[in-house]
Length: 199
Length: 199
Image (cartoon, rainbow over all chains, first blue to last red; front, side, top):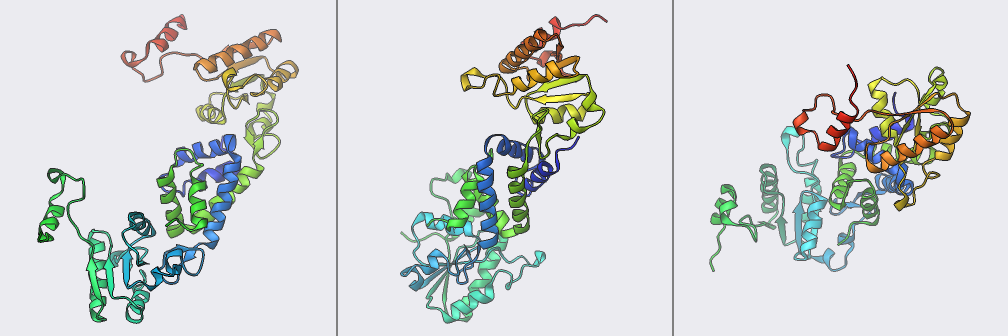
């Protein structure tokens, strides 16, 4: 016996969510059908609206349903002389939560990865270069992830900045606050030593 | 900074799924937006269709988008003299996968639980009683879960059957196949001993 067509379709559609396999999808489908049809309807509408209407901010490439996202629209921030380059919208959220940065962002939506066919154009570096040359920016802060690809991307953008005479900086790598030296990996410790600052 | 309204709505709607908290919902939303918009659209449509069109089979109360589910429509099975009472649609699937039972089902969609306000009417025992009295059934197999509530429900339905002169049986409880005696809990072992059969 198979599930009825609509139920089978719901279960197989749910497996497109990350981390959801067949068993979890079944549990989700039955939970919604048995106990939360209203929630299922709301989710269906929210999914539809998000998939159809959320695009990218034309300035910073972050997700936004408007032409310009909230940060790029912000009167003070849009005049900032700092531009922070990050890999993903989640990174923007993480930095925003610190309340430590008041400039604008540029979201690459990925990192350079020639082996996957992701070159400078795929992560919008042409748009970024235009903003660096034409914009009001005095400093570009490179906040890509400290992975091999993230470092390569930062290096590439650093060279772009140099070409156009705009200062570029890389966020500091070192021992995280609250961490204990004995549990920190050697690579991070090496960075912490080479990046030491005079007191 | 908050997420844009549509994105925030999508994330909060996703948390209605069982086992999905805020962080997982964010990951799901970004995954769909960045890599799988088509999957998101399909899921939205599947959810909509399922929530609007899946109802209950009027005969067995299992989920079905038609008036009668596939099993109740089946020409041979609908004439069966056996009726198997289970708690949930998932139980029907589990039994169907064994291919060992060829009768019809009655799905309670729960179990008796007076403390939660779930009495005989809530789990459709009035419908079941009507089927027992009017139907062609010679045996009612009680396959509710071996929990306190499941046992109570089985006992209650057993008495219903007795009242109407229909034989009722309970599925066997004992040591599962492939299990090892030393790891089986005492309660199950007690059942296995009291339910022993002559060779």
